[in-house]
Image (cartoon, rainbow over the protein chains, first blue to last red):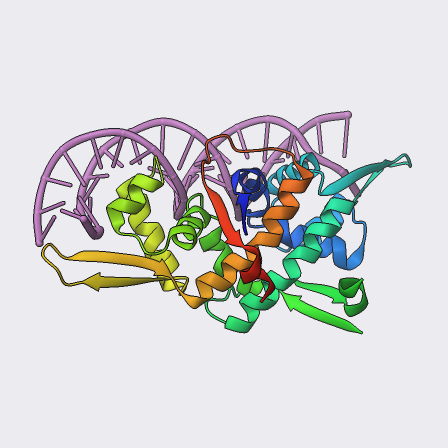
Amino acid sequence: MEEEVCFCPLYGLIDVIAKKWSLLIIAVLGNEGAKGFNELQRELKGISPKVLSKTLRELEEHGLITREIISTRPPRVKYSLSESGWELRSLLIPLLKWVSKRGGRKATWCPIRLVHEKQKLDK
Amino acid sequence: MEEEVCFCPLYGLIDVIAKKWSLLIIAVLGNEGAKGFNELQRELKGISPKVLSKTLRELEEHGLITREIISTRPPRVKYSLSESGWELRSLLIPLLKWVSKRGGRKATWCPIRLVHEKQKLDK
DNA sequence: CCGTATCCGATAGGATACTG
DNA sequence: CAGTATCCTATCGGATACGG
């Protein structure tokens, strides 16, 4: 029996995840939990505030991360993965493993790994 | 126990698959088998020969498709998915299904679906 | 039939300075 | 701390014309 999957919805998402920094942000937030703006910027060595800001907004519009404002003095902001973000992250792992296994072209500038626990993947 | 997956190799690949037409080419070749250049161009309504040519070369460099020359008069060319291409295709299906399920932004211009048989996925 | 060559506009992304 | 505002460059991708 045949099934179809349409690419159309993917193209809405690919505009987001296929950006240089998006997956790295998802990795960092998933690895280490909530982060503030400048904290993220330090972690993602080399990203400019403009690009970080734009990327975060897009990720939020797509419901992959959440932005929470903490009313302290000075006010702080907390970015973290949404449930959708976690789902995406878990779907990316098989893809990453496949790409790693087959080798090929590598980026040398990327210092970030995606850390996950085996149990989490199995559940 | 913790595991790590590095994003580095993915960035070599994402440069390729995160292009507007790459996934569509993989879908078409997977759905319908080998295709010639102009045949592909007709199928992917709207792609220019320059972009098609470049995209095909990149996909080939990454070992996702193969290019075979048929020595007839006039000579023809046959593009088809490599084994790696088929593997990638099968890994994309869960991602597509997830994106479809959650809805969200859709592209209206994309007329192409990825057709697969259930059996193939289970094996 | 299978592409390459050329021109062109839109966008991504980096650097830097600055504001609430 | 959390961003915006500018400027600048490189690349992507579309249109069209042409060559093997």
